[in-house]
Image 1 (cartoon, one colour):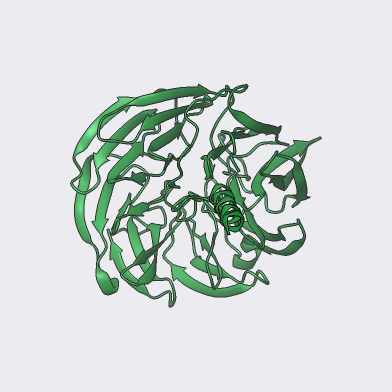
Image 2 (cartoon, one colour):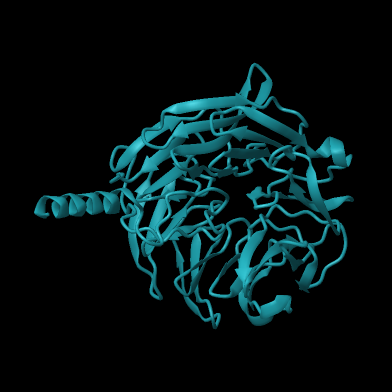
Length: 417
């Protein structure tokens, strides 16, 4: 009996070491993580690193891009744009999380040659993955589904179907894999504009929800609220909520009309029954309390000064973090809107902040990641330099960060499983 009990204890200890702790996430399957809020409450995340210290592995990427990496199981997915001898190609790449070994790559070709901003290219949309594979998208509104082993399952090119693409810098919203379909916004300066559901098996339209004209580069939120699921979409100088099952509009916050009204880049975020967002890219921050049964939200507060243009907001442990494009970090009490601090970190910023394990991670264009202790007072724990241009947002997996620079993919922190 004593020997059996010893075996049981050993097995339990091994299981506890091999499995993530309660609330910890090993997967970062889409833009801004499992819930689209930039948070994975994982302990043991790294605080300090450099190119040569506390890096589990790094790989040189072909070409470059601004899409963020995603992680499901032992797979890390990312997209890139390559130009050789005047020929452009769009790649989907898959790496093994354990050691960075490349498992497969697929050349998507190029398709519709959409103009992009000088700081980016068509590899700007973050993929969405599940245990079966990955949906990769590009800034020309072209999408593909691959199995986890790299088999191409379908391709959907939206511009030829819609016969319209009136946007200055291409498309930027990332896909979300929902139970019934892949959620995709197709929104630009002209008509038609839609919130789309794409059948995950075939790439065909499962449903379409017409939207007024107006561009958005922001990814919608899907929020669990009072027993239901709602989609919160930005753009058109408003926040609009839809029932995730029926796609019926529930409410609209803010007003705006016209094809050039309400362009926005940063995605909204949420937490503890509240949604935080902006109505256009130079707008102040709006905090809303969600109400039950799809009722219109209650406005809690509006910031006195504008929020960021490109980085998305971050809600973490009762505080709202706003990483400004000029390298200033602003922290608010999320319930009252009280500004708790405003500090300059330095460098221009595009990447959106993430948080976990009591830390907030903020990256700038120079390849610097600032690590703050989460809290009502400003406390800078570390300044970590990679020395490479950094536009993509980090991914959190277990006790590691996956960082994408223009030229490399880094896995920071040591795995303990």
